[in-house]
Image (tube, rainbow, N blue to C red):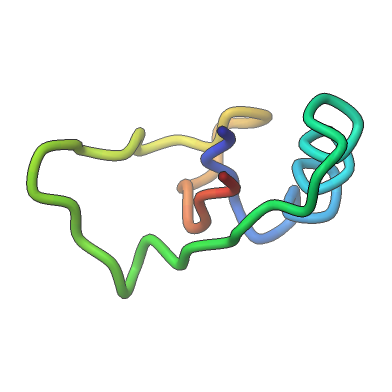
Length: 55
């Protein structure tokens, strides 16, 4: 699972496929809210705002 900014979507997708050998789902964190989980504020790969969850 990766929480990334818009600029790192492609890299996160590639890393997910390499690791799990399956296509991930992509969730827009600006449009989705979770009852029991708060997504990270920052991108996993840089200091920008996390906008997408790759899972």
